[in-house]
Image (tube, rainbow, N blue to C red; front, top):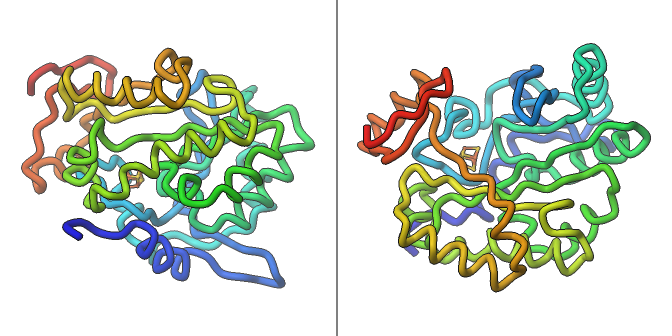
Length: 259
Ligand code: SF4
């Protein structure tokens, strides 16, 4: 195997970024914030991830396990729902690292969201959902949830190069979509794909779209196309990895092509 095993890494990370207190699973966080994404969303940023993407905007926290502080699902819910209420947002999410590491924590948070008018967007690389149909079944039981599965590249080779994980695990991105679909969730409404395109070409993107269409034709119509945003700490990581995006954005939203 040429790359890392994201499932083994998830086990190691989970031991470090979660703990049990009176039976409740707490998770490490490093920030709570409001922001303009999705037209306004309150976010809890978690520590730790099971990939090592070379373009990761939160690498200073997703690559590590010992940062931040522990929060219970109840306290996370209080924090993000309070930000959303104060600012009039409809959406809540976890971001920063991989939120499906420590699933009991997420499930308990989702239970709390069920009794509100908020919508929770689960931003995930999807690998853990793709491995385990039981995770998809449980997620499908929440009515206020939208799952955004973020692909790291358009082909297994791009995935391995960009994420550090072995290319054999790329398929789990697709399996996440399949598992969610098989649980009766609606493509584009209840779940949708996102893909990092800053390092891909038209040919590999076509291959990707063809594979998506095999799962469900509607998925091709709701791809969230991601491009690198050149924050100073992201530029630093790209420089270290000698990685050059073909399309990227500066933080003001202005595209920088062929940088
Ligand atoms: S999956 Fe997301 S959080 Fe994890 S390393 Fe990749 S870009 Fe960062």
